[in-house]
Image 1 (cartoon, rainbow, N blue to C red):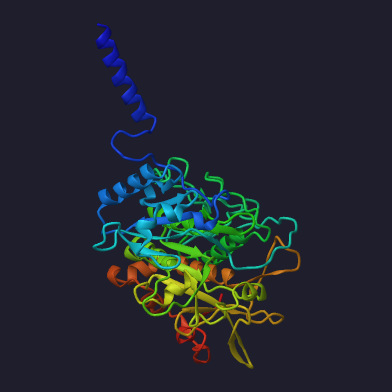
Image 2: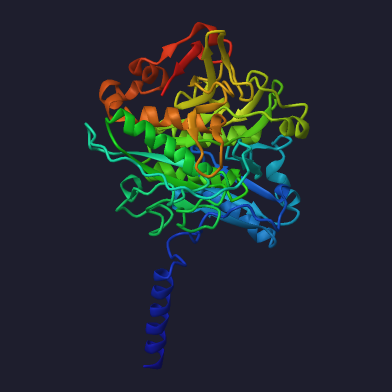
Length: 459
């Protein structure tokens, strides 16, 4: 009898452990995505992503062996959004995985412990930031979103990868994403996710210019003016109150947005990278590209990316790499727009049209081969920089400046026409060129050195 009781108690404990999440049928416990860990420098955090064609069992065995042989190495998954994406952390990480890294470049690479094809992609984790430099503070002003009736009531989900959304600046809850389905990040992530605090608190925006809030405002203003179909804003908070984020959170955010049903991602952030020589690899760009292809390109999900801004401070920090022309250096993810495999990525800058000729913004990046669209600025005082004389309610006497605020004009314009576009363009042909053609986005020949075919839009 005593033995029977012990068996029953044993079964009970096993079942209990399964229920509380230790997991009887998986070799891992789902983890909430982590943010940049200040206890480990950038060269002690390594992003590893299993290639889609790789053997899952081999990849998991590699991770298990790595952990078994190096007790100081820890790893966190991107949960069920993409359980093949992990970030490793710990001291002496390079030494710990030296065998696996042997095929990589200076920043990382791809390969497999046993050779014979790509098993995983890897690169060091590092900071990425939004590209605008307005850091003054002022009081918050409430911005009332106008009520409007739409021709097509079916909403479109646009994910805003940014600093969150200040609920005092966007007061109409009808534009807030709220899914009845269980999120891949868990039951609390059905309204957006805060990758900085690792919770669902996205209704704040402590970055002083209100970057994410203003990006969302611009998207919604475009939607209102078109009056065709509404949108739901999915806040993906990957930047802190200092405007800083990291690559791992951005990648995990992409998987989360895809699983959450987003059809457009507004990416007003990025990182610079030099052009690489032939037969060399920028492993961060390679991992970013392949991950984006899997989750976005292959699913016809659009990414509207800011072309980036160049400032004196950036040039001093990376004097050998930084210029305004994206033909001579890269700014990711915008530079993916120049890749023929990435027909879902749209790069946006700001341009000026005036009587004395048209030109690109004096501060923002450009390229006749990479940048797809120039948003026309009508600011006479600062031609080519400010967007449509839209005031920033967070900053007294200031306008919204930078390619960060050009991108949401395009994201909102496409989003407001999205249902119509899907009805007119065959699913297999749903790419940016067909979208531009269907929308009738006009061209300006004088801008072709700066923007592909001189394509421009106005508000």
